[in-house]
Image (cartoon, rainbow, N blue to C red; front, top):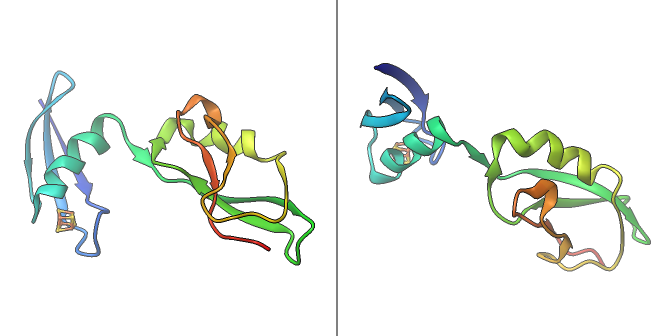
Length: 119
Ligand code: SF4
């Protein structure tokens, strides 16, 4: 059995979670102040996910970078591949917030979407 200490990042309360794990399975979570933390702990321990935000090059607008984000959280181990794949992208304005810039980034099943509208 292993015991892990995690900080819940789902709200500003930042509860300290104690997670007991046996053979790759979570057997007990304590320290959470709501059910979200209890659901977060096994996910974070066994398969952590993250929303990723960044910028890509933008042409034809007053600003040179377009804020972008993943359409949903992706596995943490995919973040490096994700950043490499979006680095060479060049987007032409106008862009609408939520517009898909590229589908299935880094095989993560998430799309890269615009985080704001640019006229
Ligand atoms: S367990 Fe609940 S109350 Fe505690 S930090 Fe997570 S979301 Fe917030």
